[in-house]
Length: 432
Image (cartoon, rainbow, N blue to C red; front, top):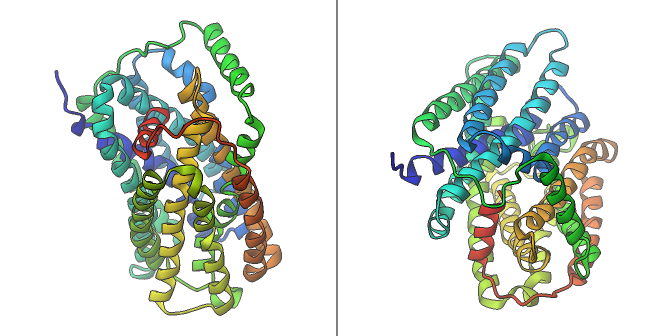
């Protein structure tokens, strides 16, 4: 049966985003609502990024067995059942440890789902179709944060404040809703998703997969100026990594603790709606800016824009505004700057770090380094904030912008900028 990509690309990438956002972002708000301190809430949710960071290491193994659709269906089914299991264990003795074990297992299931879903996309569509539907893919993925960080966080707040539920009951309903949604998507994909062809470069055995991975690492570290590029991949967004988990905590912490005292409902609206629209606008305008000027002349400017939100949060911590429009404007500035500045990072990886024998793999290595930075900074961010308070912490994050500026200034350009921002989007589609 000839299936239109519109039958499965939107739901496939929406499911990927839902799994990722629920595990690595929404859990931190849930942990905080359930009484966990900022240090542990940020640390535990950041630990769940690891599986997504190292997924290039086990991707070849997934490619070797059964069809890609099989892995998509199994992982989506298990992820849905996993969220249902989380809802069941909430409130039980030792439930926090049980939830962390479940979340940890689910993070690897979610990363495997990403690999398989990307595999279906890349092997089922021609290069022309991949380019045609990459925008649909990106838009569908970005709807995930709207639902997870916006709608579901808002729902938890409404259930708690308007219907008198305790936080356990409110979040239990949220996780049941996510479980049902993923199970429905699984059933739909069983009917609508193609099997996915075997990629031409799929290894025939574990030994061959190991050889390819070793050769990819070897050639990666033989690149000219590789250590400077590695430093760039690790440190370009180091300040954003320190801000990412703490920003929402700052919004919901009470004023007497140095926060802004927002409810979950307002947090969901501000971050999940206005924030996402600002990210999309920043990404589009940033891509246009790079395409018009070229990356090398503007990379440092992009780095400056990326780090603007640090000053925004510092000012909000000092003055603690109560006006929702002011707070919303601060979040819009944060997300727009993030979208605008992050374009430079992705295009740099595509143009300078990735070219060679293993282009897609080396691009994935670069994004993996970025993910590792986000995981490590997220794990320490809550503990540092608790020790220092919000104002001092945001001063520290301001200081952490310095490494970002240094690695950007010295970032080497050894290849011509022959590819465009659209090509970067296409490579990101292939790399997942």
